[in-house]
Length: 86
Image 1 (cartoon, rainbow, N blue to C red):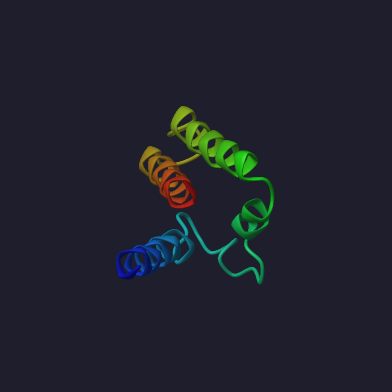
Image 2 (image 1 turned 90 degrees about the vertical axis):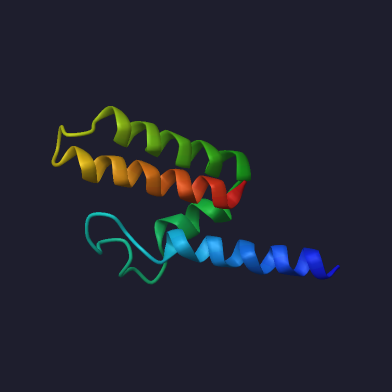
């Protein structure tokens, strides 16, 4: 039981890591309800698809709209969020 409690606390810390930052500005982070909150409120399979799809999008367009590094950082951010919900 104690091990499960420690794992739950560890999971909460991981969840807060992705939510506590934003790559490329504050245009989402400053919202009262973040888009991730809405995605996470829906079906789990759809949330998985959303995070996977956005990671792929940023990898495939890296450097097309700005610095490639920022796009890769955004892709990593989506993958981090994906790992948190799995």
